[in-house]
Length: 168
Image (tube, rainbow, N blue to C red):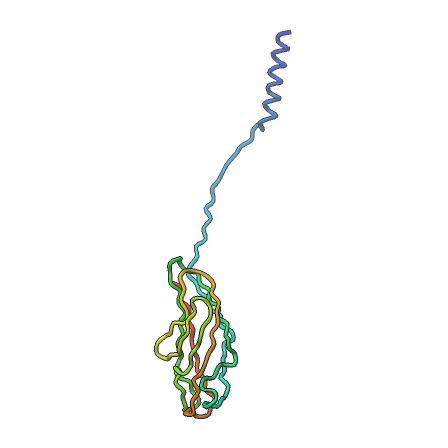
């Protein structure tokens, strides 16, 4: 009778032990390194990208506002936290109509939005139009003006102006 009790106790211990543990279960772990290398990048949107100054009498309108004012500006930059992001503008020359010119420095702008700056167009030196520290998306507006004068010859004047956003 003692053997039956011992065998029953061993069988019961095996059943209870098996209920708490899977026989033959194997566990393994692995580590994964997640990397996201980000290079500096910049994206600039100016809309609309054509501005026009209407004809006006210099006596009554000494400064002509562009008909598209205000112009929307969005400067997106990925860069280091302490790095300086800059927005510059450089005219490719004076306003030209055939053989006639109007000096580009007669065109100015006023800016809204954090970090955006007011300025005057220049054809030889890039002008600072915005400056920020670190990455982010900045939005603002530019409103352009043209100094009016009786000395301007009639014509349809144009010039290309290049904005450059630099995210080091």
